[in-house]
Image (tube, rainbow, N blue to C red):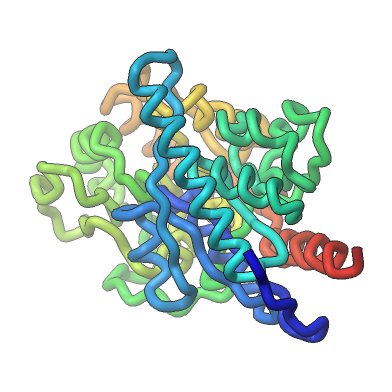
Length: 364
């Protein structure tokens, strides 16, 4: 295949492979925002979150690929076949677009992107946001030039590879959020409940049972239920606001006195940036229980309380929140601890690492 060489002065070109949940897509978007001097295109999977989140900001290409099952079986052959096709498609895309490198935030979309890039001797930067690296990150890290990690624990689990602890990039809106446009009175205690980009029905149920006691204390609750909760409208109260999602989460968390949250890496990063004390309830079915491991460091730092979902009753949740709302000193200590966990310039750091690797290839 004949490829016309780009002029040496032409902009560097980067393919970002990020798909699935907000935990993968948002850090990639935050990093892309810091790479205005680089031409960026995106690799995703049809019918996933990236189409909605990207809009028309970057050219978007799709491959059909799926996750690896824990046990080999007949489905493994289908997965491998799709991986091979996706790798060949990605390789043609990289050649045709004359890309200088690949950035991926893990997940199964990373596998074909990494393999295709290495077959063309292109640099690959992988960002692993979770404390427990995912399967693809562990299996394909050997073919990456750099693995940036959101948690130090992830680096300790990948010591045989070049890792760099940069934190997890957060959207620019979290650093300078617009004003909150919800009708929450000034001075009242505010509890924000969020289950990540997928919502959390089990957490929602416990919150709705516990919330009346918090209303009696004068607290308000903003409940981001996700779009899959059949009982989302079952609680009605003047101090309660329920919605599937909210566009200005940064301002909402900055206003909050306490959050009740899952423990995805993106949610934890947002809590740290906004210095919001939290009760963390990790998703119990997350791969390799990575949300629980994500949350441990926040608990040990004194920034959050940590509970297993199966061990947390509505009555216990009611008591924990009530106790914290009555103890301003404890909440302030948790706020301070959250602030110490934040890495506000993570996106800039990762963008600079990407830029350095693209530059190194151009000089070679």
